[in-house]
Structure formats: C-alpha cells, structure tokens
Image 1 (tube, one colour):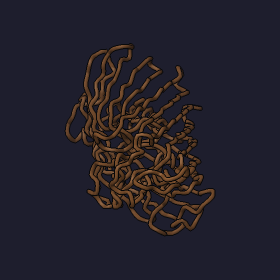
Image 2 (tube, rainbow, N blue to C red; image 1 turned 90 degrees about the vertical axis):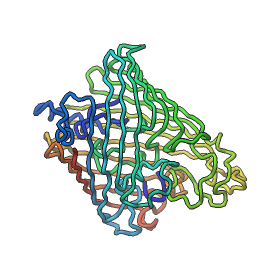
Image 3 (cartoon, rainbow, N blue to C red; image 1 turned 45 degrees about the horizontal axis):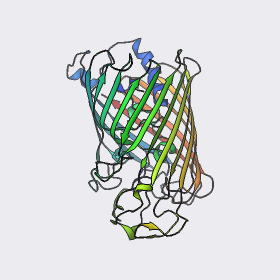
Length: 441
C-alpha cells in the first residue's frame, strides 16, 4: 500500500518455517526444497547455527534483511509507484523488511502439543500490514524506522475427530485468503498483485481451527473481528473459512476461501489519521462521530486458487477473487451525521484475476511470469474513488546462489483502462525495473 492510502502450511526452505496462506509462494519453495534436500538435511538458518541450537530443537529463531530499489521509467513524479507494492517508492532504495520470527511449530502427530509464533517487522513494510488501532500515529507515513507485529498467536494440536487431528490457533495471524503472503522470504517476487494489496486483508485477530479431514483435505473455520484492525470491544465478529484439496499425485491443488463481516468502523476515524485502511473513505465533516450504519456495512470476499504442476520444473497458478461491500459512507453520497442522504451511496464491488508461471531453470534459478487484471468498480479499494480496471504483467527471477542469499530482479508494466492513474494521475501506464536482495538468517 502507498502511505496515506491504506491498504495449508508448507515447509519454506527460504526461512525454515511455515507459509501462511498462499499457493504460488509454495512453487519456488518446493522446487528449492528438493534441491536442498539432496545437499544437506540440516534446515537450520544462520542464526540457529550461530547459537548452537541442535537440529532437532523444537524452537526456531530466524529472519531476514530485505532491501530493494525500484526505477520508474515515468520519472519520480510524486515519488510513488502507484499499484506497485510493497516497493512503492520511485527511484530510491527501500529498507523493506528487517524481520525476526520466534516460533515453535506444531507437531502433526497423535499427541496433544502446543506451539506459538511471534513476527517482528522493522522497515518500510510496516505500512503494508498496518492495523488500525495498533501504533496509531507512532510512525510518520513513508518512514523507514516503523515497527509492526504482524503475527502473535498461540496454537494447539488435538488428535481428535480425524486421524490428522484438529489444530486451534488464537491471536493475530496472516489471512488465509488468496495466494500471496507478506513475509518477503516466502514470496516468489518482490512486488505483489493489485488483488493482494487492494483486494484482500493482510492480517486478522481471532480464533481459527484447522481440521485435517484426510491427508489431502483440510477445512479451516474461524471467527475474526475484521480486516487489519486491532482489538476493540465495539467491533462485531465475522467469519473466515477455507477448503483446501490436494490430488493424490500432488499435481493439482485447489483452495477456496471466504471471509465475511462488518469492516467499516463504529465511529468515523479522525480526519488527520495518517493511514486509512483500504476501503475506507475519509469524510472530515463526520470525523469522530458515531457511525449508525456500521452494523449493516458488511464486506464479503471469495477467493479461489488453482495450482497445477505441469512437470517437475513447471508450475502454473491461477487465482480469482470477488469482493463486495454494502453502501460505504462517503462513497457516492453526501453524509449528514454519518448517514448517506440519497440512494447514490454505492454498493462497492471488486474483482481480480491473476495467472502465474514458475519454471526451474536450475537448482539456483527460477523464472517467474505473472499477469493480472483488477477491477475496482467504484475506486474505494485503490483510494482513487473512481472506477477503473488495472492491469499488470511482471517478468522476474529468483536467484539463490547460497542458502542465505536471495536475489530477485523483475520488470513490470502496469496500465489503467479508463483514467490516468500513474505519475500524479497524468499517465495511464507505468514501467518499473526493480531488484531486491535478501540475507536470510
């Protein structure tokens, strides 16, 4: 997200842990995992090795440092690469993520066992997971030295109901919708699609269960207090769920997820709030007033992800998403005491389609191609407040010459269909070249 505009687990060889949500992220992870297993069974990172932790330790301490540079062929303009996230700053270096994870993963066996995870993120990407109500006004927009705690949860594995058992997680955790993820080391490329930035949540607070129905089918069910918001007793609780299926030969994977619940606010946010959540329209005249429409302003999202392994080297992932939200205060209608005054208050909808390929050229090099269309019908998701379709095509690579070093160059072309959206809303297209380097420990 740009400052001011708001916004099935698998072993990950990049970071030595589990991935939250996301299918395309697993493509590179699985390819690299195969290459690594042939070299050494030791999956400890540099930090665990330096601390002398045994290979069998149930506790893990790991992380990475990520820095990036993005060149915008349109020139600096406002200094922002609209739509290109998290590397939104034009023609300058960014210290994206200085990320440290402390965790104890669950054991999927026939015993009751407990786990936890705590993620700590410094760097520019603190804005990417900004949660309304947590650290409000603590860090200026665009500031490098921001901090967020995007995950903090405990969990338990219960060997009940099915042979695979039931997992229960409570706290703050990354969403299970869609296919992309926030942690840089677990993403395929530096940049992410519009659908991820503007079309879905990043984190939730709540409780979620995972029922391992079979070794190929998982069912997720949970209750959450909304999208990207901290604890507040006035928030109404909603629902999140997912059904995940993997074929017997591991060539096909399908994930269907949904999330529902009120996602405006019981009271309108202050007019000078430095970062507004995606989908919120700032109306200064009603700042701080009670929102009488909060209970009926529910938001619903559906995502469907299909992952197909064509060969041992080539994978394709297709993802679709559709979201809707009832009349958003301030979108298309004037407000008096927080109430839209005519029928023009818009019912907001948005749609996304992403298609991606990953091909393993060698043990150290994976090529990636991604294309996307994102339709923001009324402009509430992107903050433009005008409906448009946005497209992007990205060609990139993951080069990993060492277990602790990851380099990802990419070339990306973005364009809008109806209105100028780039370079201070003066151009309808944008071309960027970007590179990030991660040191994994």
